[in-house]
Image (cartoon, rainbow, N blue to C red; front, side, top):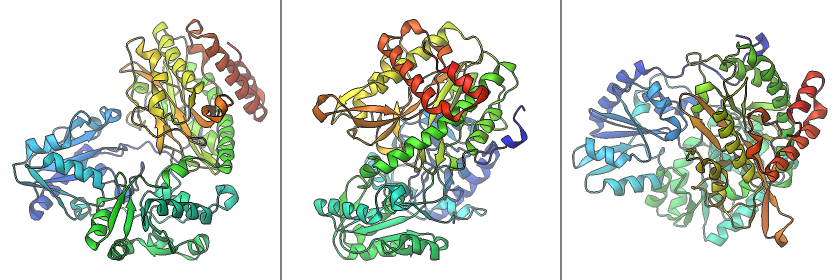
Length: 608
């Protein structure tokens, strides 16, 4: 290990979180519960009731049962068979973490849960599910697909019943942002929301996404790793005071003072009863069928409410950052840019010596970031992929998988910070010695795609789905591609992944001024190397088009490794963009560096 003693990580661990040896006894216990409940199958999703990217340890049911620790997936268990469905990001990770002799791993899509269940349970079978962990949309779709073969049965959570050493729920304190830092007061946000409810004919809205609730009430917390959110629920009526449901331990004097007169605080166990009371009024209640627990819809409908099923009304205003949020995000990227410059200089100096490991690299980057007093957490576990590990898109290094970086290999580092002023997410792929012609070709094609998005101007009403091809075209010309989205929304000191906008075929929401998106095309050669280049972009008003066009401002400030570029493949406009970007990095970050770090930055950002 070359990392110094003070490079010990605080926010990221490298322990192997899964043990395939636990799968057999836990499947046995679950099947016993299924027999007692009269069920032929039981579904175990990765999601909790809040649908967050991160879940607290007390909600990690899929990991407990299967060993799989990825951010998306679902298992189905029958009396004799079990399956784990994951997306393309986790087709390598999932088999390595579970017992594949007992649980088959399938990629979805194209595989479908309904097809698997139809094959493995008899006609007339019963499939159990916890209605707090699935959305109405998910249940409706699966029920329709199973129609005529099996029925879905809402029941108690059988994993919870067998989980004897289940961790306690999080009880971290709640913090509140003042109006200046948040950019808008809670009262103003609530007033806007009530107007939206009135236009929709809704008497109330039920909010279940923590980021929506935190943004609406200008609060933050530490209930889950990497995202400064508070787990809770909210009922916001068109008239009257909202009800905010939090863990009982969080409802103390400080929280009551912070929430003030904006809402009535209620313990989370009262949520279901209050939903029933709301439903008995017989009004129109807005829920998001894509994110709300099915249990919420069931309680409301059974009590007499009429549902208005639409997207969470907080998502869009949250995504359109106000002036204070934009200023904070720019500040966060300046702070992070300084840290990245120091880190990249260190990596450039040490990598050719052949002594660095992937964990060394994660530890040094976190240690450098922690020198900023405003750092609260990392925004996700750093992806530190040396050589072939860089081809694993969501690779998480552990003590077991830790690999030494050999000189000449590509090094991919995808990381970010949660600063008090904002959230960052950046990927850089670096040379550690001479590289081959193929690697330079692929890197340059990825870079051309990233620049094409960065330079894009487009009419208002354009979605990320419509511009996604700009990033992929240069890879397609060589008959190659990447399977992940080109970009996702990013929150302001909130989730590093947020909706409703992004850059990929699935994001059809029009881009609007104030949105912040990642721009991260890549290329991955299994068993050899991975390449990804990522900056964050702010959607801004364009000077052309009479106010009807938008463009991007790049927020991320860090050098791109020019040693990996085949300059002959770049157009004049692309070279100008890169030189201008590097000049800006040098001018904005350089004054905060000194000595060898400053000299390195000047060299790394010189014109090509």
